[in-house]
Amino acid sequence: MVSANHSGDDAVAPFVKKAIDLGAMGIEVEYESGREHVFALGEHSGVEIASLDANGKQARELREALCQIGEQTRKITIRGSEYVLTFQIRESFGEDVYRITIKKT
Image (cartoon, rainbow, N blue to C red; front, top):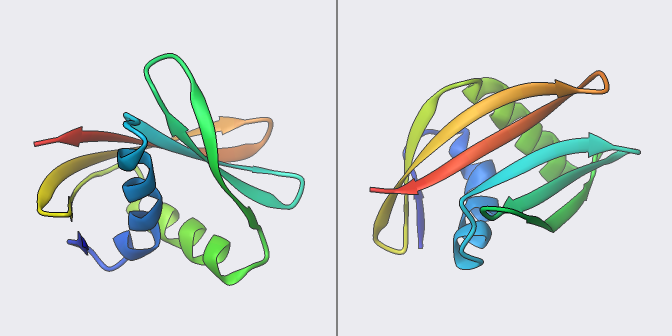
């Protein structure tokens, strides 16, 4: 069960849940060649957990949520455990790259 504390978090929550299931410490979302790539980040490496058509509904909703959230901190509950999500935005080759750090409270 995933409980988002803010309306935009609903688009982000499935990716955070998948990253937590993999033991990741965060996720990163970046655009390349018409796709939004979502990576689960470990301490020293990452693995792609989703590749979404940038024009598709799920990618648009994810991008909109990330833009609305901006560089903030949010809380989210996944399977009864609360996590703090810290959002950061950086630029890479003219595109925004979103990084979300996940910490269990």
